[in-house]
Image (cartoon, rainbow, N blue to C red):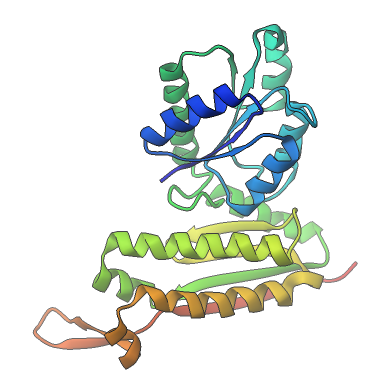
Length: 273
């Protein structure tokens, strides 16, 4: 399910968009100030941000610039919402890099279509994983290349070992729940133990990457490994948990044992300044 972060202090707009977008199958999170919206964007990576041009604590363009400056949120599509008397700023905001600009009062059906098309375009371009919202593809490649010119970084490659056997046994949808659990856990750990400039990405279905600072790296790594290995047990039934492995048909009448899922982590550290 795609997640939309709505940053707007206009209560009527928030209520309309929450009800309409939820009915359209989106998960919607609302924030009424720029600072609250920026915090929410790091806690749970959205697929798209709807951002009001005017907010109680700062201009929407300032919030947009912060989103674009942070490694974890720079790939998220942003649609700006403006009052009619702000329509003259459309060129300025689009030149700054916003993905679209909508003037209030808007046609809710047209806005919903623009939201859908913007998310689909982002997925088609391979900028974020359609299930978890984490950066993927070209964005990961660009971030890794940039490490050659940086110092003091700590790169964590996190793979869910045993995921293919689990998905074969428990089904595709339950496997997707595991991926969402892993992505949410990564965001929570980085939020608690990392920095706002840390990068999180997803290379493949069960392969994740986190880039933080060396000072934070060990704490981030330990928390991800410990919390994942503990939490992933809840996805198994009690019999599989108790025996410590899965038994899956091998296609010829026999059974093959597959280990339960656990975190496999590799690290790479950059030089200090």
